[in-house]
Length: 352
Image (tube, rainbow, N blue to C red; front, side, top):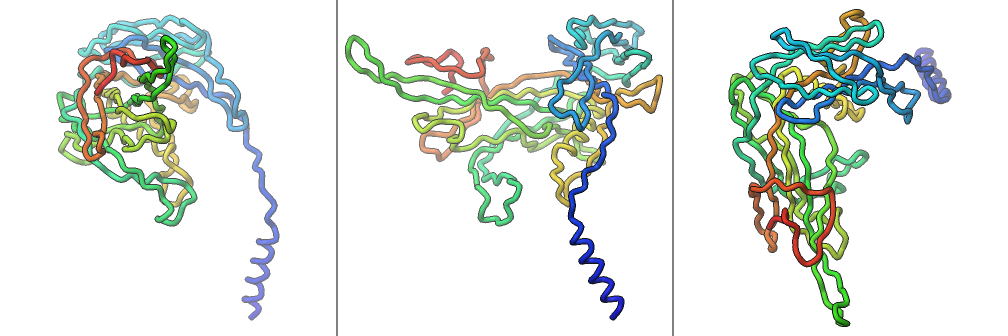
């Protein structure tokens, strides 16, 4: 009986002490962050160095790391000193040779940071892109009843990639341009006439990094049915009531990356996907390829990556009846502004 009394007393004591605990978080100096993603067959490559912002300094601007000496060395012994074109920003456009590997070196103050050697892979290629009608149920925090979830019909786009050469890991980036029409009335020669506006807008994408690689411990290196994008059947959330959707122009940017780069993005995804639920991924330190050689205990954030890139474009649209859809490759790669409109005559890039 006495034991039972003590248990009740302890519970009452704990529940009566519900004052908020505000921990004293230690402030540490900013850590160098290296945004060092190179596209070997692209232009405009830059390496950007800046200092991280502390937990208690949210909203504070990132400070560039000025005056560092940044070099890239290849396996043939050639060294390229990168020019600082802006504060903390270095031009990294070099003749990257697929027959050689490359290493990044950063001298900042008394510290020296070096990466592992990175290979230049062959340009990636998709074998096929196709879609399937699905009902998507967004994961909305706080909703517990399955009947309260919104069910969104649409097209899930997949890709197949067969292994070619040494390349077996990929990263996808995408852009979605929604075409739509609406009618306006204008006075022409004193008469009020209807005119068609051909308009478009880019839809921003968010979420984790879309990466693809062979299954762990598998001898099969081909990739099948990798999901790359979802398109709503009724894109009403992006349009006004007067607008009529006219299909999507879908840009796919396929990057060929190393297995180390794949692991780095997977570690980042494990942080981005964690919502504090019991079965969410655990937070891990991303395994970058850069380390401090002058002081192994000193951290640096970021990763040195040399990728290759191929761009694809597709036109994704439902029929007017909504009973079937099509995914057709786009032949001409026109420059398409983020948004705009044109009266009566569609722009040159308009797809049907």
